Amino acid sequence: MTQRDTLTSVHEPFGDAFYYGPERLSARYENDPEARDASGFSQSTYQTILERFEREEASEVRVHSSQRAMPSIVLGKRLFIKDIAYYLIPPDGKPASTAPSLGRKKRGVGTSALQVNGAVDGTTRAPYPHNTDIEPNNPTVLPTEIMGNFHFTFLIRHPRYSIPSFYRCTIPPLDRVTGFDNYMPSEAGYDELRRLFDYLRSAGLVGPKIAGQTETNGHAWSNGATRGVELCVVDADDLLDNPSGIIEAYCRSVGLDYDPGMLKWDTEEDQQHARDAFEKWPGFHEDVMDSKMLKPREHIQKTKSVEEEDKDWAEKYGEKGAKIIRETVDANLKDYEYLRQFAIKL
Image 1 (tube, one colour):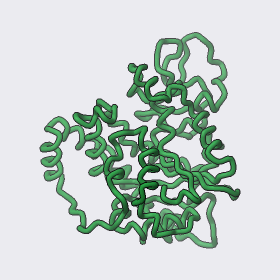
Image 2 (cartoon, rainbow, N blue to C red):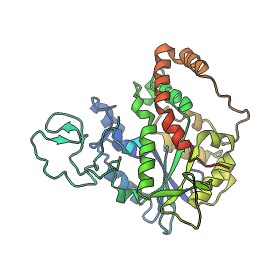
Image 3 (cartoon, rainbow, N blue to C red):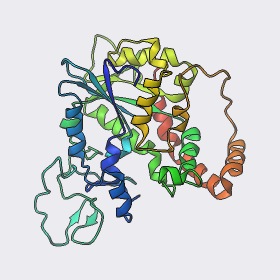
Image 4 (cartoon, rainbow, N blue to C red):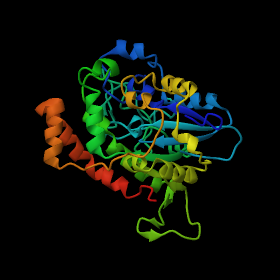
């Protein structure tokens, strides 16, 4: 966001379609049409979001960072999209078919009750599952052809930190600010991120070269042998320990010129730009909004034992909350550790 002369940033646009629009995949607001209308995004589809990217700059290279990018060489600013992988993927491991605004209607589907993506069509239900073609092995509602326009990079964080942080946003008093009044474990997102990551690798859209590493899945990478862009994974702990080193390595991987000024947003113009970008997700970004720079942590972060974590969470969120957090952390740990092996190493 600080490099506005070369980058245009868009913050979590696919959430509009995932939560609120006529192609929505999430059940969070399924029984709350007033909230969907009040969001301003009740007509957002995956197609309208892609069209927004085109409007942002007709001749940009698009860079997509999934937590949560795809270049061709053209003139103009690059479009940096910070988004969350599960916004593209049906929750709870359900199969995906192409978003209706982007694909053909599933052949042979009429008005009678037919099996579509594992659910019965012809009854009153949410928009998902969609009556559209299924692309083999693709876990998302975006066709691979479209995803090939993006240069994907990945941001991960240990679930012992991310899960309690998100849980806090779904309980009083913060839930009244965020509008998320219940905790949904499916929104942890690690399973979806891993499946997206593996699909992009198998489709040749990323890898095999790993940014900041000399190995590719245990095999030396040499002679420029690569199909897609580098596998670029940033672990939030590494970023907090060494912001300048990790951001410089990230820039090298995605073809940006590193500038130490990227780590500061202390002007009023920078602050207002951040407020404008984050305003549609109130309550989730307060720590960032209250900051002005990214600098190394002053103290090494001590890893607590499981017992210490459970005690801490119980004190903050009660026994029931601590149990939910522990179950969600444990359920997502393997996916985090899998992605961690690909993280930039300095």
